[in-house]
Length: 308
Image (cartoon, rainbow, N blue to C red; front, top):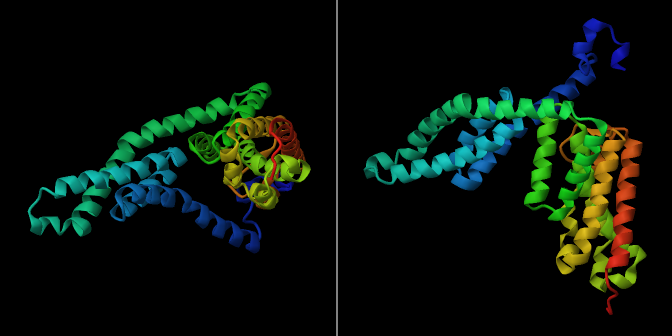
């Protein structure tokens, strides 16, 4: 209990004993890699291996500055397109100079441009957005948070891993960086609900699913509890008009309940494996069960009987 510590020790919470200090150090290093690696591999996906170093540098600058997760996202795209642009420029250079590009021009010029852009453009802009987001979330009342949880939870089930899902997830992870941990809780529970609901529905309403779907259904419990929403995609793809509304409603309910119960989550992923760091974990489980049951019942009502 941090309140049981003397005031001079509270700033050292988590590192007071040697074992705690060791685990905190390991975890700190691991999470410290998150933003540089994120930016590096976004850049690599666009500009191939030369963009990796630029992304790492941009991500590290974002992690050490005010822009955080949002800045790292921008840094990743900037790194990729910087390399794409430098390649086009270097293609017009004499062959002797062009051969130096991968070892000299790309890293030196690229990192110089990345550093200047991060310090004078990305950091001021994205840092301001981060600060504004933090102030906005801190100023929200309970009713507003419930509505936000309802929207984010529903978004997680709209396309189950697509742009809507990822937009909600990015918002949740940005909220963690801003120190608001209830947003991520609503996001994760919204993503856990669809696979769990489908697994439950295949057990309760066997005549609404094909034999292949019934056989695959129970594995969705594992995927849902691990926060892998994509496990529900094959079921949604085969009957989107009935599966998607059912899942969206259950996920929205779960997200709203998570907010109403003041549940929090400091980890950006993990499902049931990060329940030890969920605030108000019992009610979080209640919200998950409620969303799962509602979606499963809607699937049983809306889906048509199958003959196989």
